[in-house]
Image 1 (cartoon, one colour):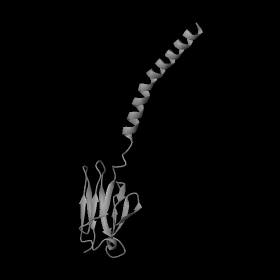
Image 2 (cartoon, rainbow, N blue to C red):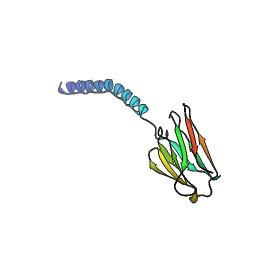
Image 3 (cartoon, helix red, strand yellow):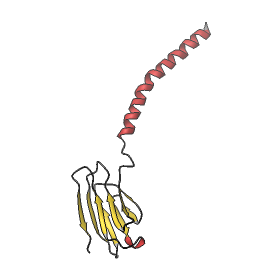
Image 4 (cartoon, rainbow, N blue to C red):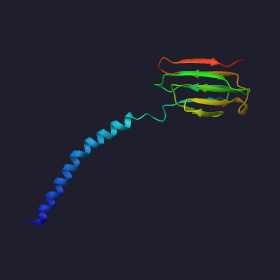
Length: 128
C-alpha cells in the first residue's frame, strides 16, 4: 500500500509541475522578445571607395552629424539617438560618437549616410 501512495504522490507532483511550466515558458518568451537586439545598432566605417559610410539601424530616430576632426582626413561622426558600432577606420569615443581616420585607409572624398525609417536627419559639416 505504501508503494501505491508514493506513486500517486509522484504523479501529483509531475502534474503540478506541468501545469506551471507553460506560464513560465510563456513569460520567458515574452521577456526575451522585449529585449533590444544587439544587431539593432548603427554602423560607421571607411569604405573601400575611400568614403565614410554611416548606416542607421531600423527603429532609431537618427540625427547624424559628420564633421572634421582636428587632424587632416579625419572625421567625427555622431548620432545622439543611436548606438554606433565602428567598422574599419573608425574608433568609438562614446556610445553614440565615432572618430574615423582616413589616414589609415586613404584619402576620404565623400560621405554616404543611409538613414532609416523614422524622421531622421543628417548634417554634413565637413569642409572641402
